[in-house]
Structures are given as structure tokens and as C-alpha cells.
Amino acid sequence: MASTQVNPTRMELTKQKKKLQTAVRGHKLLKDKRDELMRQFLDLVRENMELRLKVEDGIRSANTNFVIAKAGMSEETLKTALMAPKQEVYLEIDKKNVMSVDIPVLEYKTRTSDANDIYSYGFAFTSSDLDGAVKSLADILPDMLKLAEIEKACQLMSVEIEKTRRRVNALEHVIIPEARANIKYITMKLDENERSTQIRLMKVKDMMLEDAHQFTEKAKVRAMENA
Image (tube, rainbow, N blue to C red):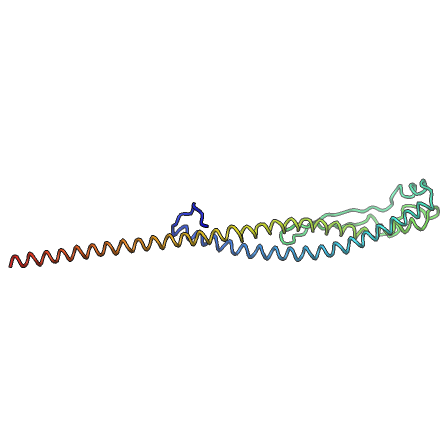
């Protein structure tokens, strides 16, 4: 249904046609963007599921070793062993743009490159199960950071997908039909005005011809009278 605020003029018709053309082009671009976002989102979801299972297995293994280590060591010895960490981890956060979505990129580096620096205690008074727990946590750290990165990316992309979907629906169901209805309404009005103008011109022409005919007849009559 055409808007009541639309003026049925040729200038407004041109404006509505440009609006429709822009809306159709924007609808196609946004639809392509939405489809590509969905494809990448589903890839991230699959990767997220695999990483989550891997991280959960690593944490479960570390917890099991911690429980066993705690059972074989005194609580005071365990606390002393873990009191002063030897290795340090520095986290750097960057961003990358994917389909106009700024996705975080997490990178880390350790204070030293020595793999044995993850053990902050001597091996004389601790059990090997504690070593296994610490090693499991150290090994799972890259996957944990990657999991956090992917989950945040999924969250941001889902928001962008929803925004894009709403824009696509607005263009498809509101703006484009409204522009087409306005164009149809203005075209009908202009055609109606043109027909009315033609009818008026034809009537004027008939009136002029009739007047000319009457003038001619009167002239003939006067000529005959004078003769």
C-alpha cells in the first residue's frame, strides 16, 4: 500500500525508483553477508565443540592427578610446592576483522622458553602425579586460550548475524514493497493526470473546431446575403 505522504510527481517517481534500486542492491549485499557470516559461524561452532571436548578432557586429567597427588602428599607440602610459581605467562590481545566483525585474537608468551620452568618445586618431596597435573594444565593452556577466542568470536558473530537478519527482513518486507507500491501509485496517478489532460485538450480542440465551423458557416451566410 502506497504511503499517503507521497506526492504523485515525476520528481518523486525518480526518487522512489532510486530508493528501490538502492534497497534491492543493499538487500542482495546484506543477504550475501548474512549467508557468509552463517557459514563462518557454523565452522567456528564445530571447532568450538572439538576444542571444548579437548579442554575438558585435559582439565579432567589434571584434576584427577591433583586428587591423587593430594592423597599421597600432605596438604602443607602441596601448598608449599605451588606457592611460588616459577614461570610467567603474558597475554596479548589483538583483533581481526571478519565481515565487519572485530574478532579477538589471543596470543601468549612465557617469561622463559624452558619447558621445565612450569615446575616451581623440587622433585624430592613431591609425587609424580603432581608433575602430571601441572604438565596437563600447561599443555592445555593454548587450547584454553583458543577456546576463549572462538567462543567470543561466536558471540560477536551471532549478534552481527541477528542485526544483519533484521536489516534483510526490513528491506525485504518493508522498504522494498513500500517503494514498489509508491512507484505503482505515482505511475497510476501520473497516467490518470495525463489521460485527463488529453481529454481536456481533445475537448478544447473540439470546441475550437466547432467555433471555427460556426464562424465559417456565418461567413458563408453573410456572403450569400451580400450577394
